[in-house]
Image (cartoon, rainbow, N blue to C red; front, side):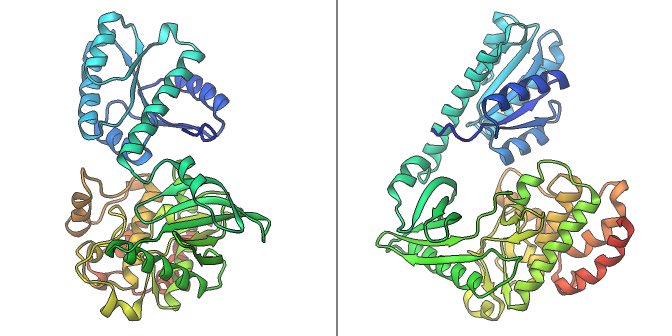
Length: 419
């Protein structure tokens, strides 16, 4: 396991001072560590956060002097582990004893740390064990994992791979150094093969290059190079050190910030739609941020030119993220530019509230909600933006904004109100 990236931790039930203490020691050891707070008494929210963050460890602070509260937390932990058995749960125990430790372990906890005797070294050792366990579980679950080994075996002339950024069933993405450009770039690499699935992936990879390279605009990631090697296809593109909108959403946004991103992403969609391109996989992870906070669209692996839609999208095939997918796309129906606007509406709701509008125990359950559940209602203090949500997330495409231009025109009053 690489030690150059910090752990992701989820902490439930901790008092503010304990959370501050834990965060201080963790970030002192791993400066880029992420420590997220979670409610201890809301199992649904805790389950969702654990699924979204994929933490190396879940800390649960429990006061064993309050038996009713502990019973609820242990029962919640057991339920959570039945859904996500790979979670590494660590109990931070107040007023506990040996029998409390045994009880916590029987309910699925991997470690038990008495708060009265906890030390920095014990905390960091527990996190290190959790990271090893999480890495091993991920490596078993995902055969494409093992970033150090993979980075060492993949060689692209003219580029030095620094580290792996992400991986999927489709491709692996690396931070690399371009010898020609003398700067860091993103190198997207796909294995070549002869199976039907691999040939389809190669076609998608080639299409992504053709689509992005056909547009020269600041809101679209710049392409530097595309090539074919005996074992791989690769795509070299612009690197964004400020990370993506998904990372930005880890902290709450104001209404003004949410409107800024809504408008900026709508302007980016207008650009690709003018070129007849549908993104079809719009989500926070596919919106990068420049140093000036302006968004940039990436990952056009699912994109299509709208004129090709009738003959080549494969009606009946479902692709895209279940959290942001439009009703028509989730049902494998024909899509147009309004499907991107629906996904943008889901993102706007998440930006305003900090929550996704629909959640479920499976991708199918989430996609079903996009088709059948009512358009989500904003909290009263955000009700002024409900008309935007209603039109962006309308179940029927004909009830949505007809284009990004129409959305942008409708945004002017809302932007003026927060100016």
